Structures are given as structure tokens and as C-alpha cells.
Length: 304
Image 1 (cartoon, one colour):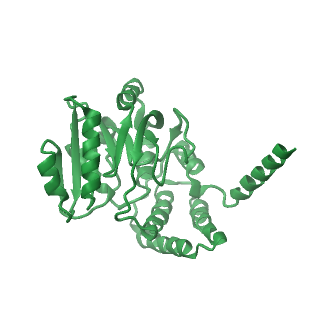
Image 2 (cartoon, one colour; image 1 turned 120 degrees about the horizontal axis):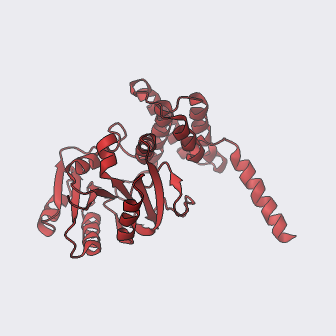
Image 3 (cartoon, helix red, strand yellow; image 1 turned 60 degrees about the horizontal axis):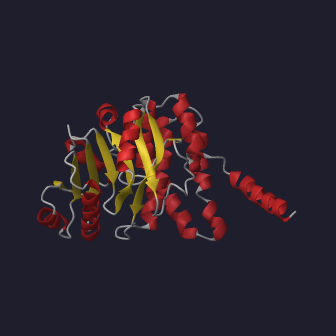
């Protein structure tokens, strides 16, 4: 069995993809126990032809349509590695990969190892992660997924096109008896291509999927947490970000469109508690007031 399978998805980001493949090849070096799998989501920019011409040893899967994040599942299904290194077409591992793999070998209860994302819209530092911290969600541009866990619970949810899909997978990993943990010594750079990125799409999908997670996996206080998500995302109105609020309301509408089609699969109470405590949108709506007061108090203490 191949030791490690790098699995990434590309959609019309040819130059970013070629950059990522070059950097990933450099990390691998002369090692023979690695493979790289690229799932192309029906790109029309010559991505497929460039990969075939420049990286003939890369396993290339051509998706007939753009299925978003669930396209990773095509790569997972093909992969032969004991571990799947999940990266984006615009992210790459900088250092510490062997250390991370050894850590997973030593900790067989870890299903997903979240790597240290140094740059991009979401970073490990911004999320306040500490070494060895147990998580629920992770940042999808840099993580390691254990194949044996994938064989038990599958990959990304096929009903979630983009965004929040890492939280869905994390919930299922935890409910299966494994951990999602953070490893700081394996670093990942996310270049964050601006191609196909939209604030509207981000907010609509995030609201839709956040509410869906609560509806699907929570067995207690479901309505309370859905209301918290609704109210927490109204906060941008304080800064007159009316477009952001409008996109959020569109996401609420999209949630109610799919609500009755979702299969209810409550996770155990322990997993649910960890989820609602660590998931920012389900936290108490007015907790920001306490944080603001703490900052003010802290400043006064410093001045005194």
C-alpha cells in the first residue's frame, strides 16, 4: 500500500494547480511511497492538458461536471495511501509532513489531523488553535485524513457543494469514535487564488450549511442553535454591511429549501456539545458584549 496520497481538486485554476504540483513534487523529493491525485472539476482552461503534459505521473481524474467539494471523494476512492493529504489547488505543504505522519502513526485514534495553515482567509492562528487541541471542524486546504476512517464513514457530504463541509466530516469522524486534532509543526501555505471566489456565494452557502448541520446532527436545542446562527450573522448590520446581511438571508432561504430533504442523523450528546461550544455561529448571540467589556476592562487595568 502506498504510504501517502495527496488529493486535490481543481476548477479552472491551471496556473495555480501547476504551481501546487511543482511545490508538492519538491516536498516529496525522491520518495516512492507517495502519489498525487488531481480531480479536475470539468475545467475549460487547459488544466487537464497541462497536467498531462507536465506531470505524466500524476493520477488525473476528469470529472464531467463541477461537483464542488464532493469531487474529493473521487480522489479518496482512487487513493491507495494509508493517509490522504488534503490540499487545495492553491495550497501546499511547506514543512513537517513526515512529523505529522509519524504523529498519526503514534495516535491511532486521530481520524483527521488539521495542519498549521499559515496564510489565507482562514488560518490556524486566527482560529486560536493550540498544539494537540481537539477540534470538530478543520481548514480544508491542509489536513490529513486516515484512510481506515474514510473506509468506515466516507468522505465529504455529497449534498454540500462548498463551505462548511469540513465541519460535517469532523462531526462524523468524532461520532465514529475518532478525534480531529491540530498539529502545529506541519505548515501549509494557502495562496488563496481570487478566481471563482465570491463573498455572496461564501455567505449563502455558509448560512445554508451551518443551519443544515444543526438540523441534521443535533438532537437537543435544535431550534435554539438555528436561531443563534440566524441572529449571529445579522451582526454585520452594526457596521452597515447590508450586502453581507442580505446574502445571509438568501442562505436562510436556501436552507429551508433543502431542510425537509435532509436525513436526520443525530450525533451523540458529547459530540453535539463539543460542536455547539466550538462552532462560532451557535454561540450565545450577545457574547460579543462580554468580550468588548473584557477588552475595555483590560485596557483600564493596563492604564492603572
